[in-house]
Length: 409
Image (cartoon, rainbow, N blue to C red; front, side, top):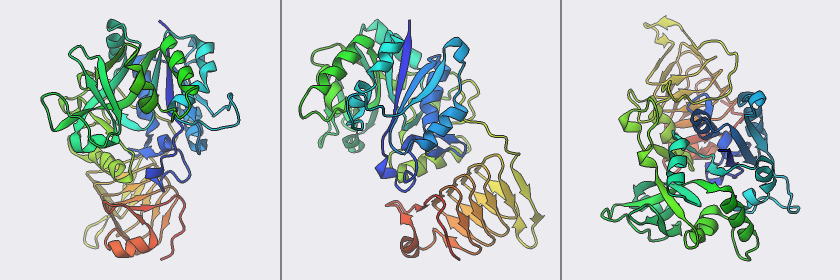
């Protein structure tokens, strides 16, 4: 059977501003050395789905560089992860929605001629064996299969909410409803679409072509394709909570995070530093792949406890190329080539690549984007009123410093 994966990576990510000011949301770093898109791509690679088209659009340079340098599969065997920019094949216009992104790139499907097509988002953190979804899809003889997961009813307004019958067939769908319907027998939760779909090629081509001709359509997969397709085709719902990944601990079963806001992104990152995190990066049976750079090992120097000049990190992820030079790091994530100088303390923070922290700084509850130099003795995250005068501060109190921002002491 011939399979093709199409990964939708063209969104603006407005709610992630200023981290998306100069990059697409799927290219935002995560867990120190990864990008958000690496999780979706790693799921396909580990599942043996090795023909992947990544549809890009907004601010895609960082994403394109990451894909070209890190995601090189064997062309000799016909395997690839290829970035596809907006081609404007149907006219001089950007993608009008996720369904239109597929419609404008139907030539990719025509050229490859797959039997089944995965249409997945690039914005979520999770592990999934997509072969199990494919098996479910084939056994049900489905035209389309949608992955779903239970979410608290108060959060369901942000998702497409699904209703199913006893066999798992979709019998109702509402995109971001004001009053979500709860799951049968569980008034506290609703069944939410994860935005991951599997189509027979014939059904996908038919549906996106039909949608392209509809006046008033927003050309969105959830709102316009799935919301109507289940009434005329065999649309089934795959329970993500039943997906089993090799090496996965019981706590991680059903783990899926939509990191669509800065606060959600911040908490999903810091979950990784727990002693026994729900989502572990250390599963050797289902690794997360990413670009590899030839940086030296992380280094911790100075141990003068009398003066407090100690280079150390506790409950943290420290990437390659970092130097902790007489400073302290606690419950934080450092991307490659970060330097922390003497007598500084970093708490509950995420530092992107190339951040340089001067001496005697105090930083907590912050996200610092790439290539920012923090002047000596600067204090960040201790006085919200003062932080709001200088930086972006989220509703949850996370201070965000944009890429390459010039700071003065």
